[in-house]
Amino acid sequence: MDALVVGGGPSGSVTALLLARAGWEVELVDRAAFPRGKACGECLNPAGVALLHAMDLLECVLAAGATPLDGWEISPRGPRVARGRFSGPDRALGIERRSFDAALLGEARRQGVRVRERTTVEAAHPGDVSTPARVRLRRPDGGKEERHASILVGADGLRSRVAQEAGLALPPQGPTRASLTWRVQGEGPPRNRGRLLLGDGCTVGFAPVGSPAASSPSLWNLTLVLTGTERTGSLREKGWELAQRVLEEGGITWSEHPEVVEGPWGSGSFHRPVRGEVQGRTLLVGDAAGYFDPLTGQGIFRALRSARLAGQVLTGGESDPNPPGSAAGLPRYPGALRSGLRWSRRLQRVIDGVLARETSRVVGLSTLRLIPGAASGLIRLTGDRPETLVRRPAPVLPGPGREGGP
Ligand SMILES: Cc1cc2nc3c(=O)[nH]c(=O)nc-3n(C[C@H](O)[C@H](O)[C@H](O)COP(=O)(O)OP(=O)(O)OC[C@H]3O[C@@H](n4cnc5c(N)ncnc54)[C@H](O)[C@@H]3O)c2cc1C
Image 1 (cartoon, rainbow, N blue to C red):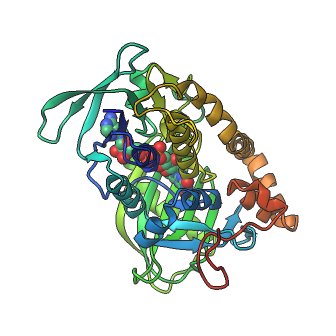
Image 2 (image 1 turned 90 degrees about the vertical axis):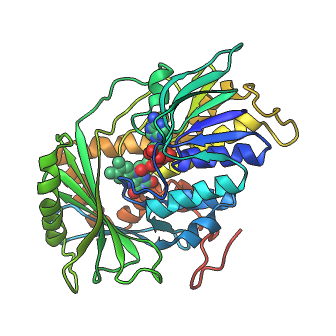
């Protein structure tokens, strides 16, 4: 085959479908059965929304159910909040990962990608100039199978097996962090924005998700991130109480007691650097290509952006396309990725630096409340659309007063 993609999250599905659109023969394997839930704050930032629109994928995502978000509220402590709005018609989306990921995977299937679920990559060889890449798979029936491909795409997330086997993964770095995500059902809080609440040694993200019309009572994402903690069984027991307390202190009120309908999904630790994104005939996209921190909610945007860049360098330009399976574009990928994500990576490091210490965290976030417009500025920056600081973007989401845009 021309390409084998490992992982059916957003980075894998989008890379696979872009290659298939260009006439490549593509197979995608994932150890999970879809639809599947995942540890995530489930907010797709405005740059991610714009990117889906540019790749003709926004419609299938909206059809799967999504809640438009006008902005975020940040609570350094207690009910006092800093309110930040995206610019004018620019909005984010609260999405359920189970339906978002399944929608993109379904689109990959429609483009001709052969999708194999419950199929795990156990070993991989990145290939070189003269030999194809190869992987050893475990099929759903437990049988083993070896597959060869001209190009191998590692889209297998945080602890990427492909990155490890290709010698690209570095040891985890930074502070230990663990997270728990619950799907909550209930009515009360406003559904047009997300909330980021800072507790003692923890951060809670809280946002509406899913289709507003389809789900009654409404669905929410509740994600707790703890610093200095490993993922353990006891965290699961204490985590829910802690998250509830932080929500209460942040002034979130319900008309009746909220109910957990799914989860928790656990994750951590997060800082997973790589020494490079290409080895032999193998390239990495999404979290597999290096992950830093979930706090600023840029992960899905980066997964989509890296997938698009991978698709572009592998297939070549429209006037001078590479033949299916060609490795000619691989050397261009690391540079394209570096410049395509430079902004996002720098911003995330600055925010992480501020949040790393309790004092700078409290001072930094209190400043957001005191300086008018500061919270909106930060929200726009973390939305990966710095251009919206100086000009009003064209709307891409349909809605009241927001005609579908270019
Ligand atoms: C707590 C938390 C909160 C977050 N909040 C947000 C947020 O609000 N907004 C945002 O944009 N980002 C957020 N992120 C980041 C976001 O979830 C990731 O960046 C995004 O999912 C990356 O997509 P991906 O396709 O690279 O990997 P994934 O979505 O992780 O997909 C990887 C796939 O590979 C499969 N796989 C793994 N290993 C194998 C194997 N050996 N064989 C076969 N298949 C395999 C898995 O089953 C999975 O389906 C958050 C992350 C965490 C942990």
